[in-house]
Length: 260
Ligand SMILES: NC(=O)c1ccc[n+]([C@@H]2O[C@H](COP(=O)([O-])OP(=O)(O)OC[C@H]3O[C@@H](n4cnc5c(N)ncnc54)[C@H](OP(=O)(O)O)[C@@H]3O)[C@@H](O)[C@H]2O)c1
Image 1 (cartoon, rainbow, N blue to C red):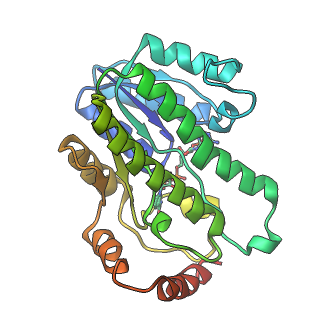
Image 2 (cartoon, rainbow, N blue to C red):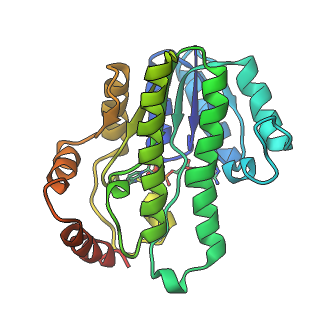
């Protein structure tokens, strides 16, 4: 059985790949960095008797000129690969953030985040729910998507989309009898390369990506719909339900400002 993982070269996606390889799943791994993908393939095929297919691609290319019939070359190539190796598990971990003052931000960087975090997720969910007859699909949103986040406005809003979109189609799939189990992983801070890439200057502490991936997979296989990889994140989510939005937004202002 194949597991398809985006964002497989780093952080949570890479840890998911290591864990699923250990469990004997064949892998289809994607990210932009071909050299890192090749390295990971060598490491995994040496350690385990599994097939590892690497498919380097920039997921934002699924957006430009793509339609669901697959008219763009990027979409066609991915469709061909997934049709010939229908995954039983799909983990959509690729994502990126951006911190800073909205008024001084470059629109092209913001557009890139929106295309990666939102549009590519929608395109991939369409493709995968069409191809996968059954199994597990995990979209990675964020705890940041459950409330406003000043100085991280674009990222938090993009993850609000992933969170709501996933929980909505989850209900639809159950209603229509689709056999794919779709779950939303909503992590709090995880110690990966994410912050550095997002332009965070003050390092935050966070849970390890290994722990995050292990707990997330365990809950996914148990059929959990909304997955929090840590108790603190789960508590923060439920506690936020009892606080006024204005207070949460105010607190977020101070939390996010520390990252600048
Ligand atoms: N870390 C956290 O604190 C945290 C908290 C909540 C939610 N999350 C979410 O968790 C997910 C994984 O994040 P992470 O912490 O593991 O981050 P990470 O270590 O920065 O990994 C991001 C992965 O996405 C890939 N990627 C980035 N842009 C891409 C593009 N345009 N096309 C294809 N692949 C691309 C990267 O590979 P290449 O550079 O090789 O393309 C990398 O493999 C993200 O969706 C993030 O929003 C993270």
